[in-house]
Length: 435
Ligand SMILES: NC(=O)C1=CN([C@@H]2O[C@H](COP(=O)(O)OP(=O)(O)OC[C@H]3O[C@@H](n4cnc5c(N)ncnc54)[C@H](OP(=O)(O)O)[C@@H]3O)[C@@H](O)[C@H]2O)C=CC1
Ligand SMILES: N[C@@H](CCO)C(=O)O
Image (cartoon, rainbow, N blue to C red):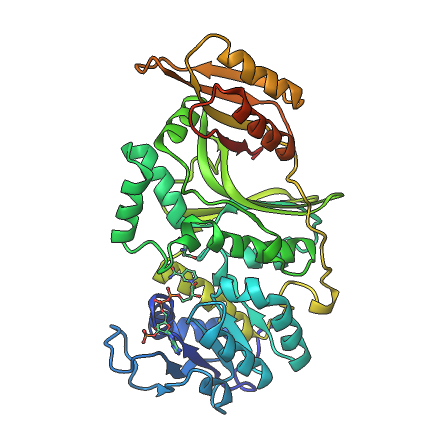
């Protein structure tokens, strides 16, 4: 029920961090104040803000708001009901602020996936003990309302799998390499010049940022404690234009894909480059867009796509959390009481799948036969195989698509290939995901 404007005063926000997202939130509130007030049934106002540099012109009006040099002071202010943490980083000032807000019994809205991936369980327990809420829609896939979809819209389902492309920068790099025929290094430099990469680019290209997001979705989906340390993670740094072109030639595109599923073997959480069919929705995803696919036993498959980053889309998600709190909608951080979240045993190996193998072999009699023997000895069956025409007569590029196999068997086979004396260069193995 919408709260009565007669009985409730305004919801008063203290916002820490006035960078891309913080400024976007201020703009949204200043532009849509009346609309937000009508939707919430009460006004939503900013009373105080914090950032490092008070003198910086941020292109947005700050005059009416109180200022705190120390962000944690926002949590102690009597005129702040909700602390909005938009600083970033999994430790330091962001963690100190969120802990202070919870200790003061104040609700928290954050866009900080790193913070929750590392401290989510502890913070959720503390918030519940203090009667406070933590909302984090913006932390996963920016403007796509995936936390809400999973926590609320699909709450009646047993979730069977969560997967998606959740790092826009990596999707930009991979699609740009393919479209422009550029190398990884060339597109990486371009992405850096465009300001797409995090200050520490490994967070993006190493799969860490997307891994943080997947860990949060997995906790909601499977009712488990956030376990980022158990994430199997591999970045896109080793993907070459050859891989992209040859995958395309076989009807696939390479994506940095996150997959979480629960099976008898435990919780599987993976963030790694995968081949997906080019014609699938995930395969069609271009540039810096994100897409999340949720599978439930009753609903089947739900696919959500949109902008995963940027001022407007991320502010849109932050505003959704703020409106929930203004309306009086209060949910457990990960969709059920934190004390009930189970520690999930991590699956030691990913579910078997077909793999794409790119090998460079010495171009001499019997080379291919030796590789086929190694695969056969490891119990790996070949589905398709192709040797490309090549100007260099000393080596031959060979592509193999296997039938479903375990990653352990594949890694064993790859290690055995080294002993055949016919390999030239390190084999590349990329999982083919059933999407
Ligand atoms: N940018 C995006 O598209 C997305 C971002 N996010 C998340 O949102 C959060 C914010 O990101 P973004 O806006 O891009 O980050 P920015 O780097 O643009 O902004 C960070 C802000 O935090 C302020 N800050 C830094 N240290 C302190 C401190 N000790 N006390 C108070 N303020 C401080 C900075 O102040 P100053 O300006 O004075 O230096 C700056 O205003 C992060 O957790 C990020 O992961 C999530 C989804 C998308
Ligand atoms: N670096 C992230 C920002 C949004 O979390 C991305 O590229 O998707």
